[in-house]
Image: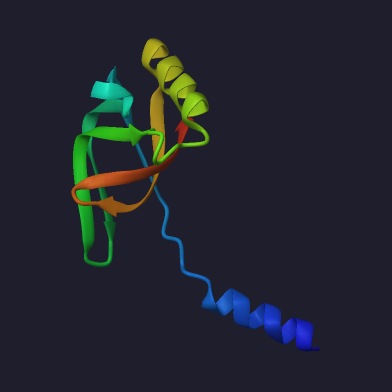
Length: 111
């Protein structure tokens, strides 16, 4: 019984995650200066809104640095390049804003 109560309290205390999928066609994939990641440019402006937090843009960075490594960077970049070359729509999952930039956590290809 103590185990169930503890589990219940842990679930209630966990922060809520509001991940939003946003989709559009890529128009460019480019590296960022000094190897800090990749810039994705989209055909449409993508907007993330959660409560009072809002960020939008057509150019969105997928960061990857030594200080802040992205464990799925190579896989995400591979998906982005495949979608770019085939003209397929891309969906990015966004988990909040950092300034006016979206915090991209994953990339998927739509058919």
